[in-house]
Length: 567
Image (tube, helix red, strand yellow):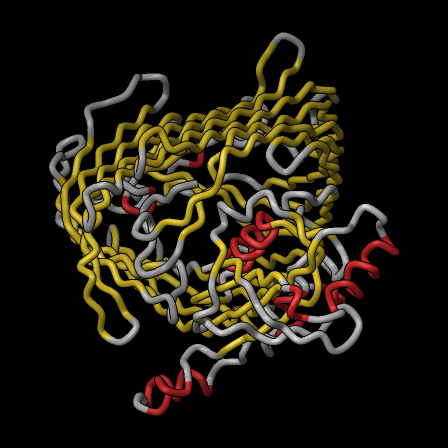
């Protein structure tokens, strides 16, 4: 965790070469240092492998894991820091740096220390203040050094999956490395196939710091039984709270098929060849606690449709080949109330950073749409996303999110989607974490392909097969008691969960049907060294209701990640 420390660092050259402070150096609390402004002296980075020398000496598994892992390079960590020696530095910057480093997913542990220099350090601080004043006459604060210590987590991942649902069996495997050559880059390859001769193979790559910059580059290629797909993108995100610029550009092509389900089986599919291009640029104004964003966005999409096929093909109204272009304005606002570091919310043995804030983002502009056999049209389009995360009581956290998007043609609403999501956690009953999740989704499309929403095991209604239920509106509730046993086997921690799920689905305007309920229990495995913030989820669920006379058997599910998390 971060700390502000007193130090007797030795000044040797330039702004000073700092000596790492001892762990027992007297510390200044973050609260006491919150209003202090320093001048940054040096930044020292110490990156460490997954396991320490002591752990490796007594554990052959630790030796093997270290041997298969590239230790993160110090330059990768340095590139995440936006403040240069000689510039003003606040404790809030140090806290944010630690959060940002944890958010990369590369580390099991991050510790950032702010070390003010004292008069005993000699002429170094004066030289540093002089160098800072030369660049900024107002920079007369005391000098402080920053020490960053990181411990890596396992970055190579090998996974396999299998299922047997509705007389359809499937197998899949993935291999990925998320810290290639210690540069923080990711490469992954995956393949899956089922007994219906459907398959998907993909190779993807992400360059975290493209050409040594803050730009992230991504690329993907692959193939399914429908054809090939691929894409490439470049994004320069907002890297920190005071950062004022962001942009992205991406292009993709995809030969796929849109599937329509009935009782978990695909009854119709429409082959589609899609090409897309997306570009956006945004600027941020204001303070780190309260800011506005404004920018431009452009999207271009083409969709070439083939005839529907399958036993339910006659029920699918396939549109003509379509071309659409959107060009509009994006703007938003954010108020940050504060940040919290918690454990046991969605993780085991790992610090989870919560940003408590109120946010909204809006998008508005025209969509120019042309469809084969139809008149061209210009359709006003509006999108809105809101999110509110807060702590109403101590150790009680709530997240509320809502989103909507609509497209008009004259007085008619041609396409639209709505979503709502609420999560609430109570941590005061440790080792229990009481968690609840409510979600609602609705969508419709009058000009393009019909939109179908599904509900089942893969959408969080445990106990019922994946995509078993289909409709236009979905409402879902999840309740969990997450229990941290506090037990460890090596670096692996163990937890359990007892849960109750209930869902409703509406099809063809008939209203929500009877609730579909399930209960169950499960095991949770976490390891900051092997999994970082993620958990292994193993659940045994028991369905309580039948549907149209069909009964369901208990299901076992195994996956990586919780059914729902704090947004």
